[in-house]
Amino acid sequence: MGKYSGYLICTDLDGTFVDDRGELIEKNLKAAEEYMKEGGLFTVATGRTGSYIREHYKGRIKINTYLVCLNGTMIYDTEKEEIVYSNVMKKDKMDGVKEYVDGCLCAYIYTANNLYHKIEDVPVDADIYKIVFVYENEEKCLEMLCKMKEKYGEDFDFNRSYKEFLEMENKGSGKGDAIRQMRTLLGENAKKVVCFGDFENDLTMIEEADIGVAVGNALPSLKEIADKVTVSNNEGAIARIINEL
Image 1 (cartoon, one colour):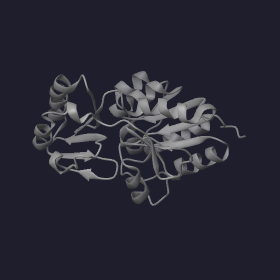
Image 2 (cartoon, one colour):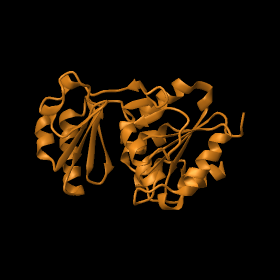
Image 3 (spheres, helix red, strand yellow):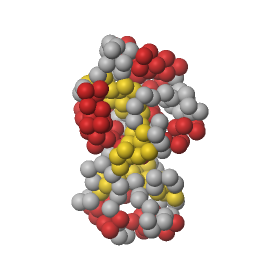
């Protein structure tokens, strides 16, 4: 037993755990390592895939529980290399989505093991976890957000992970849903959940946390609902809060 036993820290990656260049911050890494040594559970909740984190950061990001990836639509056991929870998109409700995929600047369609740019390239038997639509500017992204919400809002959720990136997922999925699932999976080991974020796709996670933390560079809407606002991602926000805990 350590002083952080029963705590689960779950942090967003881009704009939160890493700096503006996407580089890891040493004091965040050190603080997370010391926190885990004292019994706390630490993981990342990202829109990216587990393979991206493993390959891009060369194993430097250490976690000691399940990984939340693909914007919370998948929870992955990195030790056993298996999916422990997933919330996939309803294909029978996706009529006309190809038109939006073809009409944006670029699209990313995520299945469990692969990334596609066109709907027609996705295997018929493959589950789709999320679709990311990339637009030329924020104004166009917000315009398409309204249009797609109007057409698909009953069956799918929409949020942004960057100003120009619009994400489409199954209704009720996302990082907040993943945190609820993590509580069930971890039981007494996650009695107190602390979540960090900066953008729209982190909102539900911040709301679901016992302590929701907005980094200093977060959107005003996220700061409004957070329990705490701390320093920016470039200043080592995770290390700051761990020290305060």
